[in-house]
Length: 106
Image (cartoon, rainbow, N blue to C red; front, side, top):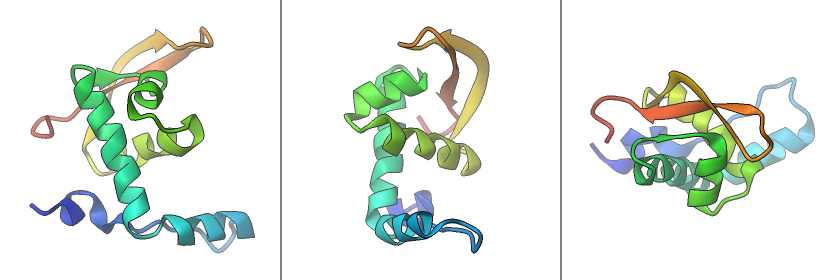
């Protein structure tokens, strides 16, 4: 499977009802940027033993929190990661979902 098929072609979308800033961001992220961020998030989880909270994904990927954590939702929708059913405290002390790689993604 090619990387583009694996990561869904890297197209970012905005809804008609979204503000103009969201539409502009979708244009910027269309193409390889969204794919690269998803790959960074996935690799961060891999490097953390196949399980990670959002704070760990941020730290290991080297990306800003607001750029990398939305990729967790898109990876979940694509069936590459799942909610493990566990939570761990993040840096703020609040509990975060422990994301884990789905079977065959490792």
